[in-house]
Structures are given as structure tokens and as C-alpha cells.
Image 1: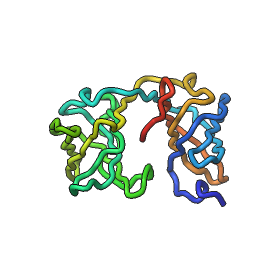
Image 2: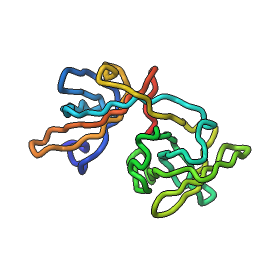
Image 3: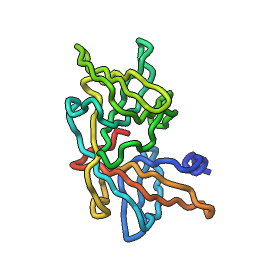
Image 4: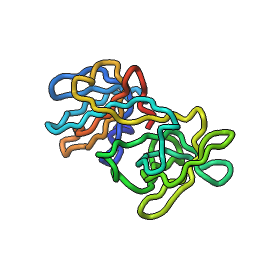
Length: 185
């Protein structure tokens, strides 16, 4: 059994689209596996584009993958800004599968402080708060409207998937990088 098949559901597959038809999306995962996903009738496709760190304001609702930093804080691996209609999505902090020891925190920016080596964001969620260091090379992205027509061979995606009782996988949400961008989350 592949490592992918052993994962608990729901989970994610990150990679490049190999092929797409009316109902099936085939993704070549980062580990090299071909993953076939049945797209649900209510699939939500979101585009991902780069933005500037300065676009993050107090009150922005963000998600950030972090790893433990040397100073005891958290260092951002990536930051994504949710549009207002996605405010509250997955609010909180939990282990994440992007990197070893990584955490995903979705929260509201309470404070942003510029420093010599980046920005420190204080983010607050219902059960706590974190200080996140965002370095100058940390990818910062946001979501833009997209549709199934954006799902093309070669596009980089992160697809949220669920394993069905028959062993197949389905997806109802795919984030696709625009202009060759690989979604960093």
C-alpha cells in the first residue's frame, strides 16, 4: 500500500496536474505518485497569486505554516491571506504536513511590526495567539477567483481530498497557482 493510501482522510495532495477531464483530475504528487481525484459537482477552485508582505494589514485573516524558530517563536514557511468571504476558515492552530514539525495557524492579524530581518505578526485565534516571524524570502500569497477552466496540465495545485470507501479519492476544493506559481502551503 502506498504512503498516500495509508493517510487518514481528509488529506491533501500537492503537485502538478497531469491531466483533467470533466470528472477526473490526475495529479503527479511531489513524491512522484499519480493521484486520480474525482471532482465533486460542487468543487471550489481557487487561484493563488503572490502579494507583498506589506499587503498584510492589522485585521487581515491569514493562514501561516510555521516551524519552531531559534528564538522560541515561530518562523513562517509561508503566509496566505484569505479573502473576506473566507474569514474564519479553519481558525486555530494544529499540526500540518508541509514540513517536519510544522504547524498551520489560521488567525486574525492583531499587530505587525517591521524589523531589520522581516516582519513579526502577532496573530490571534479563538484559543490563543502566536508571534510569527515572516522573513523577506517567505512566500506571501492570496486567493483569487478561479474555475475548473484553470485546471490545466502542468498547473501546480494543492487539492484537498477524501478517501472513499471503495479506495478512490474525491476532491471538492483545489487551489491552483497562477502564472506558474506553486501554492506554498
